[in-house]
Length: 311
Image (cartoon, rainbow, N blue to C red; front, side, top):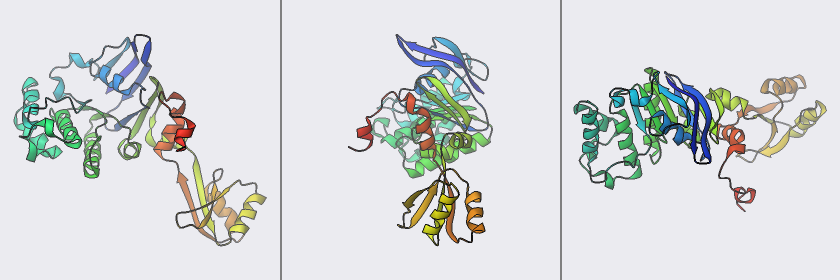
């Protein structure tokens, strides 16, 4: 387990992380979310011993990272995929890391095959595309077959096939009982990958909860209904004090949107009054909507309302 307790980091008068506490448990993928400047990367750096906290502690399996023996066999990390000597080949980049950590050289070929870089293993990393560099960074994180994975934006620059591969890999590794912490700004992908969320804003904890609970608790549910006789349904809803809005769907058909009732309640009301319904569905807001609602007050770099509306 990864444990952060009272973690605080000051840079002069700027507090990047403020009394942050959470746990990353094995067997699930934990997503680490927050707006730009929230303190995610700083927190990850402190977990990995790259920055010293002003106060508080960060431990991996009960001890600081720097106390781990042969750390890459325990913890795999990707914080900056560009941190590669441009004149080294992909294979040589991994070989020196393997030798420094007592990892067999045969493991280099295994991870290059795993991330799909076997064909370019002898090419210089400086000529790699963003996606190829990201795959090489992931290969380095996986080199020691670690129990813990800490990944900052692991799908950045990857194509859809690569994103799907990373998602499947992380879920499979979590199913083996490994401990995985990932950050990403691709919220639609995070909603498919993570089981649990830790959300921070301006260095402080905003939420520490299962994914589905976060979406449910921080976003609205809408019932969409389409009737054979829309006017009659609208009159019935008004008579029963059910508030609704009129809209059209993608096929330009008239629908009613209801935010303060369930599909069961609307279905019973229509049935008891002999009204035929053509559609009765429940729409729940996405992770993106829940995230924006939860963190809007913590955004450090915020566009104006005019910009957001496209002027």
